[in-house]
Amino acid sequence: MDLQIDGNAALVTASSSGLGKASAKALAREGADVVINGRDAERLADAKAEVEAVATGEVVAHSADLTEADEVAALVEATVDEFGTIDHLVTSAGGPPSGAFLDTNDEDWQHAYDLLVMSVVRLARESYPHLKEADGGTIVNITSRSVKEALDSLVLSNAVRMGVIGLEKTLSKEFAPEVRANAVLPGPHETSRIRELVEVAVERGDYDSYEEGLDDWAGSPLERIGDPMELGNTVAFLSSPKSGYINGTALPIDGGSTGANL
Image 1 (cartoon, rainbow, N blue to C red):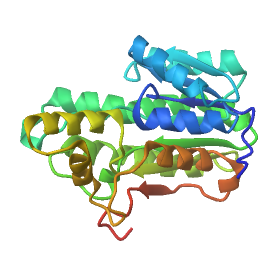
Image 2 (cartoon, rainbow, N blue to C red):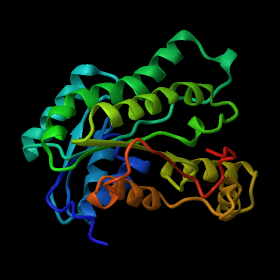
Image 3 (cartoon, one colour):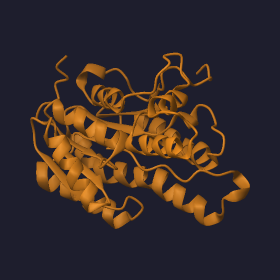
């Protein structure tokens, strides 16, 4: 399917690894010019090479800390300087640390809010003038299935990510009809983070093999863990005219593992 985004400009945050990188690859493969983002220079350079390997457009890497307002503004400005506009904004951020409620302090809460919510607030605000002028501007927020079903020992993710969904729904109304806003809610995918956790568990003797450990992460009716590109492909679809009547939606991508009806 031709997603009709060839030559569009996309900014994908936290895209030096994981689901952000998969989203950048999917957009780049469809012909979009893409700015990728991360904080670690070496990892960002490796990700740029990986995205360029499948790209038919231009790929630019820009380092920025998403918890710093001035760096977010500079990231948006750099994207516009490179490509002249922003047609598609994909927001992603590393997850906050795990822990129970009584084990988290005020600093933990503030950092999680800055990372997960204020980064999206600032990115949307800075990008909006350009998205509005685009022919079919889109925002896709990568959050977590934890907004549908609270997960054990993830109080920060369970609570704070809900703010992103409220924001996404609001923007889907306030920015329409020029800009559509949607969210994706990933369950476990075979990212480098999960591979690392499984490998450590194998070394610890919890599993006899990597495959056994990975199977333990699955927990879905499909009986497997997700491929990051499956999420990336969905993000690219939601960024394209092919999904033109989808707006204000929070779409679980978890193989059916979430227990919530809605």
